[in-house]
Each structure stands twice: as structure tokens, then as C-alpha cells.
Image (cartoon, rainbow, N blue to C red; front, side):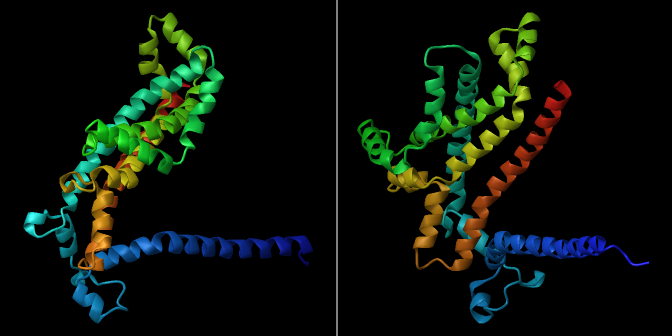
Length: 294
């Protein structure tokens, strides 16, 4: 008994799409992870080995040389490039910015969603419009203003600037999450005796936790990687450099080998990966918490 023509076509299409699926996955992994893996392998080789065996892309475990990481991270007094100190400065700036932005944005987004006031719709539209202003337009006025205030060589100045840069988009992101919180849940909490702030802390924030964590991660990454304002305000104050200036120093010097440059570049991505792993757990926890409350 012969099979219907349609079933043969479906079987052929299934086999073709099965092959195409794996080809697309392999191509995507190669394009996205290939350069990163090459950088990791390059950072684990000595410069002598790179020169003598340029085609040996993947070193064997016995050929690993992690001295480039030590050179990149050690302080200048110990013969290194001081990247660990720059990472500490960036951690203070990024964490301070993240805490302040989330604090202000949670209260601001809640007010934009729940409170009634004149011009509320216009204010909500300005959240994103402010973020659309190019950073380079604000660079010179901010540089002149903070220089006259005597705050040019300060990490706190960077926190203020990043706060102003990221609050509008953080408000916009959190506003969408707060809209999804049912007003009836808040009303029930207030009937049970909660004040407005207690309702935000005990009801709204737990239910919007996935959005808050995602916004915090976005702010942290922006503050960690920012380069333009760090260059403007800290370029002549090396002890206060952030990681973006530190890596720029490595890439701009002819005396720095590619293995040390790659080791420094890989090292500064580790905090981002760690923060993302914690954020991912919080995202899952927040989603589960919201489901239980719903």
C-alpha cells in the first residue's frame, strides 16, 4: 500500500528542518561564542607560544599559562597594570548607581502609574524622550559644570551622571511592570491596614521583582562599561580609573602583549557574569513568587 503524497512531503520537510535547525544553532554558537572562546584560549597562552605556534588555537591543559591574568591584575608597584584596583572602582560606581537608580525609579514609576496629578501623561512620555538625547551633547556642559564645582576627579560624580542617564529608562521599564500589578491587590493591603509605603514594600515590589532585577542588571552593566564620562572626568587621576579606562590603557600601549590584553578583557567580564547569575536566580524566584501570590 503506497503512502499518500502529502505524508512524504511532510516527512521530507521534517528531515530538512531538523538538519537546518542544528546548522542554525551551530552557526549562531560559532558567531556569538567563537570570538569569546578564542579570547579565552589566547589569554591562557604565553606570548612565546603564540609567536612560535600561531595555528595552535586551542592549548592543551599542560600548555595553559595564566601569568597574563596576574600581570593584568597586579598593582603597578608589583609590575602589573593595576586592573584589580580599577575593577574595585568600577564596582563601587556600578553598585552605588544601581542602588540609587532602583530606589528612585521604584518610587517614581509607582507614582507615575498609581497617583493622579496634573500632566502625568506628559511626564510619562518625557521619561523615554529624555533618554533619547545623545550622550555626547551633554558631555561638555556636564564637564564644565562639575569642573567649576570642584567635583571633576571624583567617583561620586560618575554616580550622579549615571544616575541621571539611567533613571529615565529605568522608570520607563519599571512603569510597564507596575501597570501589570492589579490595583485590587494594593487596595486589599490598604484595607488590612498597610500604609502606602508598606503596600509598595510588601506587595508591589515582590510582585514586580523580575522587572526590578532586570532593570538593576541593565543599570549595573551601563555603569560598569561606561567609557566617555570616565575618560572626561578621571583621565588625569589614575588611582580612580575604572575598568573601561584600564582596558583602554592596555589596548593603547604597544608594550602590552595581546595575551595580557585578552586576560584583562576576560577578567573584567567575570563580575558581569556573576551579577547575571545572581540576577537570573532572582528572576526565577520573583516569577515563582508572583505566581504564588496570583
